[in-house]
Image (cartoon, rainbow, N blue to C red; front, side, top):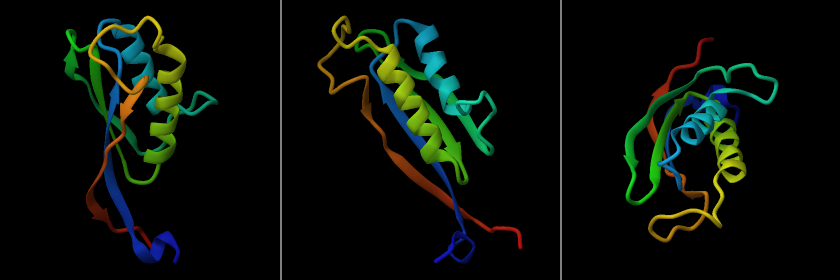
Length: 115
């Protein structure tokens, strides 16, 4: 079935990354969620929160991104940036799985596509 028959979904991702102490790294990961490789913004992608949850002791942050149809590409770009930027050999904090620990994605609502 085509996406026009199914409709579109507004979805959000709470990307859990293993960095909180170096804010510039968290900001660069959030920027990667917004920008394609060519430097243009992903259409219809918004980063809603960067530092609403940033735990210095655990050295973890959650970046919240939302989109109607580009969330997958956006989250992948942010994850790639996290893998490049977070040095897991030097990472301090509670034990973690990697530069990106968790990628929960939530459907928020259905969106009617214009005909």
